[in-house]
Length: 332
Image (cartoon, rainbow, N blue to C red; front, side, top):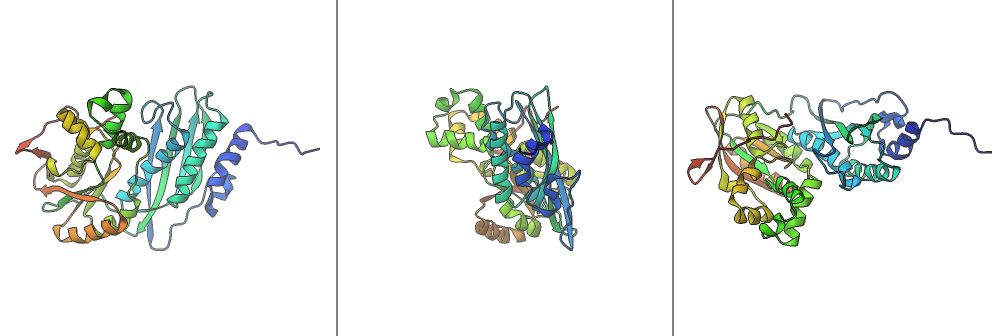
């Protein structure tokens, strides 16, 4: 007769779906109350945490595997902007009763695939039941050489302002999902429509550029709450101002098509958030070296403005400073 499995349902769920993701020795197979993480010699640990809540950061019907990938990637984006390489993460997930084992399996598969791809294994965490919406929180850990983490408070007047990738796609993708008629109003092709949807569903953290950010940036942060609001945060922390040429803000073909159809979308593009690109400042003499590193890493970068003396971030279009009804996404 087979031996009786005396583990609780929670223990069995963890063992089946999450323990296979805990490949680091310090995770102890998720069999203990805590994990052990030893940074490499001469390195500092960089810690970040971010979460997803159903109905706020993703839709109830979004694929579970993509939700798992997004939960990890938004944290990897923070690490990349600090110049840090990932070494592991903790997962806390609160599951409503309606979530079945198939959903959990798909979530774990998507999360595990990205954990392996980005070299960021699961170290531990917590699983709970909740009467409210599905909630996922990840705390990610990275390392940088001692004293080399790139802060948001060290930009200097005279620096250039650079951003990776393209801005506004995820915010437009969310608008389009909420209103299916926008695709036609914006004259989008099928490929353009899919591109906007995918940028919202699954960010692309710029981990390949982390080393270059560390070597060349004077200050950096990731763009999660919108370019306008996040640049303002960087300026406040650094005690400087910035002037941005809106015409130089990088847009995808899909965003350009939408903006051509509705010029008012410039506000959404610049303030909507969920870009998960890196915003950085650096001395002009460092720009060409950064360009070369970005080319090698296959990450597009764009110079969009300058850091100047003063306070605040000004976005200039056709010689006039734009004003925004809501400069930054905020939960409160």
